[in-house]
Length: 170
Image (cartoon, rainbow, N blue to C red; front, side, top):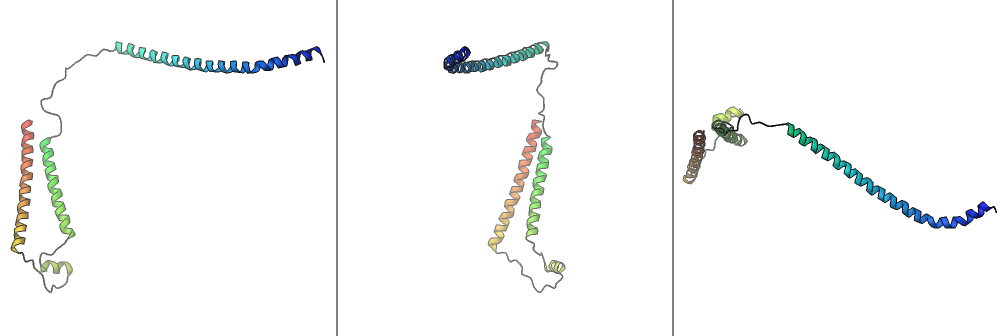
């Protein structure tokens, strides 16, 4: 063997012992590099945000605000025309009630007399059954009509009160 070869053979075991140490140093250097890189990026981000906030404060210093007309409390509230709104709501409610009653009467049709039945069917009417109201049924019917009349009067009363209160406050 030559002198070079013997020297290489003797130095290989020494160098092989140093490889794990060099690898751990490389790993430590890579960790330190990553930490330093993250810190550097944070510092850059802080510098940019400080620069932006500095620019923002300098632009607001250049702007000045002056009050031309002082604020005032309006005499009348701004909003919908309440009397008109109340009237429209009343009309819509009445129309809805009448429409519902008409729909119910169409769902359960009855004939008011034999002539109407003859006109509609085109057939001769042999006989009819009339309604005989007992005294109890008549009182129930009158009571129902009275309740409906009182409810309608109450509706008109509430409408009148609301209309008067809206006119007084304006």
